[in-house]
Length: 190
Figure 1 (cartoon, rainbow, N blue to C red):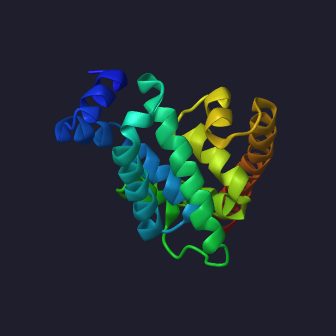
Figure 2: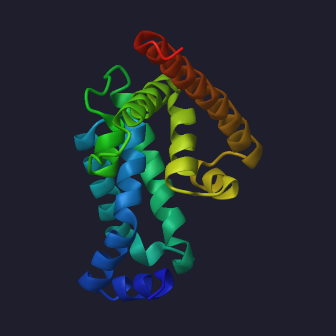
């Protein structure tokens, strides 16, 4: 069943259709809110408020096939609003692990740890607008135009923000190279 059909059933009061829509988008949206806010509880609150607003306003949605963008735009407004209220709070949790909901153990644990720490440091160092753009693009796989529509800015602005994020990610590669080089020196392999 596509989004349009789900919205039509939700308008008729179908709880099952609402549950299906929630299952379809909640994980991606939670990850985005969490990466932006840095707090599991805050992200859950924003996600819940987003879906409550959708349930209450489903009949006002002009184009049922654009429900994904409606949800993301609503979540965007709520995360920005919530983020401004809690701007001075810093996340204590491991963002990458909690956003995925699971801690995956890879064969090469050292590289995994370095990648996670570097990614977390980069995400924490980004401004809220850059962080949001990075999450929507790299984690949620949205296009530049989709991100522009969700955030209410121009596609050129999204591209500019992605360029800034890529520059920070390039620093991550340098950090990994330096870390590997230092370990090799300590182990006496070079």
